[in-house]
Image (tube, rainbow, N blue to C red; front, side, top):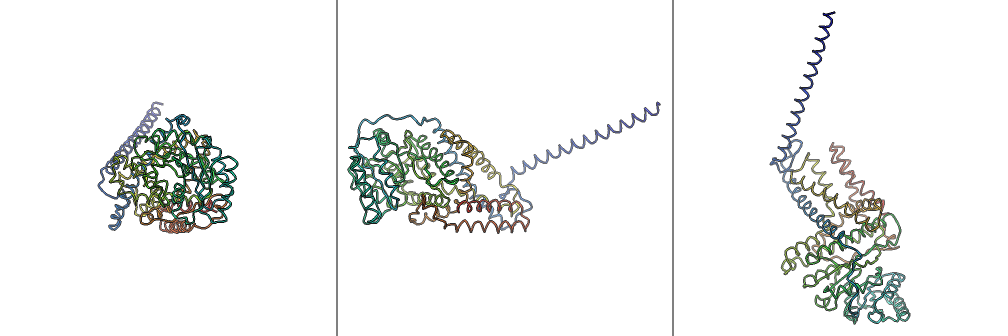
Length: 527
C-alpha cells in the first residue's frame, strides 16, 4: 500500500508539473503575441513608408501612383468631414428652434406682384397654381398675379382663359402674358414679368408649388425686419405613388429641413444661406440693384449670392412650409441632381474671383465656397470602391495612418449624420423604419447618380450647360432612355469582378462585386 500511494503521488506531481509547464508556455506565448502586436502598432504608427502596410514591397512604379491616390483621397475625406460637421451644426440649431414660433403679423401691407413662370405645364397644374394664390389671406386689393408663359399660341390661349376666369371669379387683378422670344430660361421669364409688375415686392412661385394662405403675411413680416429676400422650405408631393417616390420624398423633406432651414437658423449673422427658386419674395429695389435674375439655369443660386454680395440679407421662414412636386423616378432624380450640381459649378466658375475679392469676411467666403463644392463629395462613395480595388491589387493591407484616421473620423461623423436624419424625420412625423428604408433606397440610387454628377460638375466648370429638364408626373414614366453611363459602369464592375477573382485578388473582387450589385439594383429600379 505505501508503494502504491507513493506511485500515485509521483504521477500526480508529474501531471501538475506538466500542466504548469503548459500554462507557463501559453503565458509566455501570450506575452510574445502582445509584444509583437504592440511592436507592430508602434511600427505602423512610426512607419515612414508613404504607402502604408503592404504584403511585400509594392513595385517602384506603384509608389508614385499610390501617393497621388492617397493625396486626392485625403483631401476628399477632409472636405467630406467638414461638410458633415456643417450639416450636424445646422441640425443642432434646427432642434433648438421651435417650428411654430413666428414674427407675428406685419404692420404694413405693401403691394405684391406674384409671378408664375410656366412652360410645357399641364393645364391642371397651371389651374391649381392659380387657384392656390386666390386662397391667400393677404388683402385681395394688395396683390396681383402675372402668369408668364413661354408656350406656343394654342397653349397660351388656354392659359389666358384660365387666368381670366379666376380673375373674374375672385376679383383679383390677374393677367397672362406670352413671351414671343422666350430667352433666358426661367430667369428671363421672371425678369419679363417684373417689367410688367407694379408691386413693391415680387413673389415668384413655381407652377407645381403650393403655399399656405398666410404665406405672404409671414414673408412681409420678414421684409419689415430688414431682409431683402425670403423663402420657405417645401415638403415633397410625389405625383406617382411608388417605393421610389416615397423614398425621394422622405429624404428630400428631411434634407430641406436640415440643410436649408437649419443652415439659415445657424447662420443668422454670418455665412451663406440659399433661398430656393420654388417660392420666394424679394424687394423690387433689391432685385433691381443686383440686375435681376440671371439668364442661366442657376437663377435662384445666382440671385441669393448676388444679394449676399451686395450687402443684402436673405432668410428662410420657419413659420410656413410650401408643398412642391418631387421627382418620382430614378431618371427624373438623376436629371434634377445633375442640373443642381452643374448650377453650383457654373456659379463657382462665374463668381469665385469676385467672392475672393469681395468685402465678405473670410468665414463667409469659406462657408460659401464649401456650399458650392458640396456635390463632388457625393462621388466619394463610388470613388472609394475604385480606390479600395486599386489598394487591394497592390497588396495594401492598411493605408498610411493619416488616411486611416480620416476614414475613422468620417465613419464616426456619418453615424452622427444618420442619427440626425432619423431624429429629424421622427420629429417631422416619419416612422423610423420608413426613414431607414428611404435612406437605404436613396443611398443605392445616390451611388449610381454620383458618377454622372461628378462628370457634369467638371463639365460645367468649363462651359454653361443647357437646361436639363426634370420630367415629372406622367412624363417621368415615359423616360426610359439615358442609362448609358449606368450600363457602362455595370459592365466595368462585372468584368473587373471576374478578372480579379481569376487573378486571386479576393478582397478587390468583393469591392468590385458590391459596385456591380448596386448598379444592377439601380437599373432594375429605373425601369
